[in-house]
Length: 271
Image 1 (cartoon, rainbow, N blue to C red):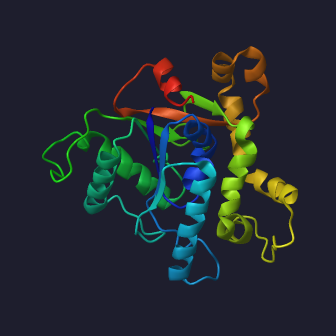
Image 2 (image 1 turned 180 degrees about the horizontal axis):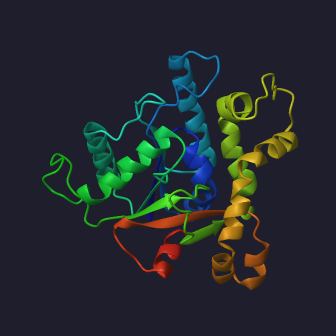
C-alpha cells in the first residue's frame, strides 16, 4: 500500500490534474489524500465569498466520495491571496509529516495562476525542511522522505514538462467526469462565465450524456499529455494499447525529496 498526497491551490485542482490516477490508486487499495491550499472563495462571479467557500467545501467532499479517496482537506486561506510565506510553509510541512506520504504532487511553479505558483512553491520549499528535526519540532519527521512530483502543465517558459510518468485514464474517464460534475459552482457556473465568456449558461436541463460532453472540454488537455508521453505509454501498457490511449495524466519527478530511478517513479503511480 502506498500513500499519495496531492496539494493543489483550489478545490477542483486535484480532481483535474490527478483525478484519473487517484481513482485507480484508491480502487487498488492505496491511500490518496487531496488538499486545497486555498478555500476557493473567489471562484465565482456573483456569490458572496463566505457562502462560496462553504459550497466549494461540500463540492469537494462529494468528489472525494466519488473518487473513494481518504480525505479532501481544504485549508483556510482565501483565494487569490495564497503566499509562499514562512507561516504557510510550516503549515505545509506539518501537514505532510502527519500524513506521511510516499509521493507528494503539486503544481508546476511556473504556472499562470499566482495561487498555483504559491502552492507549488510551498510544497517544493517543504521538500528539504520536511526532514529537519528542529524545524517544526512539535511534529516528528517521517521515517523516509517522500518522492515529490509536478503535475502536468502546458507552459513552456522556462521549459516544458518532462513526462517521467504517465497513467492512462480512458478506463475511468466517466468517473473522473463525475468528480468534475460535483464541482457545480466551477464547471457549470464560474468557468463558463470566466473562461468561456458564456454569461447565461444554464446546465439545469442537461442530462448526463450532455454533461459528459460539456465536461470533456476540461480533460482535453490530457490528449496532448498522452501524445507527449506516447513512447512511455507504449512501454508501460504495451505497443498496441499504448498507441490507442487517448487520455493520460503525466507527472514529472522533482529533484527535491527522495530520488528514485525512472522505472521506480513510473511504478509508483501504477495501481
